[in-house]
Image (cartoon, rainbow, N blue to C red; front, side, top):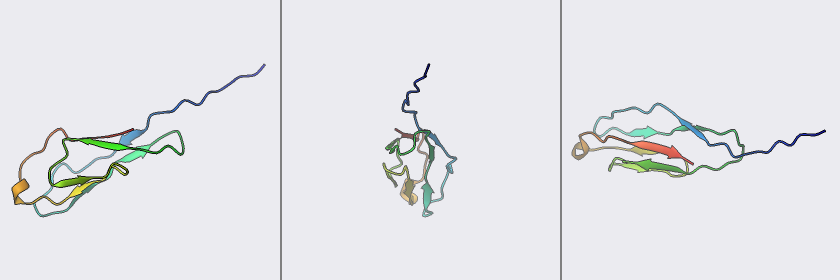
Amino acid sequence: GYSVVYDFNDAPVISGSPNTSVNEDSAYSFTPSVSDDDSGDSFTFSITNKPTWASFNVATGLLNGTPTNADVGTTSGIVISVN
C-alpha cells in the first residue's frame, strides 16, 4: 500500500496592528506581516480607501506618507489585502 499527499496552495495570512491616527506633518508608515505555509509564493497586495496623502506599495504592502493640514479629518474603511 501507499498514500499520495497532494500539495494544495494555502492562502496567505495577513496581520499587523497599524496606528489608527497620525498628526499632520508627521510621517506615517505601516507594513503588514504575511505568513504562508507554501514557501516561495509571491504576494500581491491591494488597498481599499487609501488616504489621498499616502502611497501604497503593491509588492510589500507598505502604506506610508505625511499628511498636511489640508488632510486633517478621518479616512474610514481602509483595508489592506494580500493574494
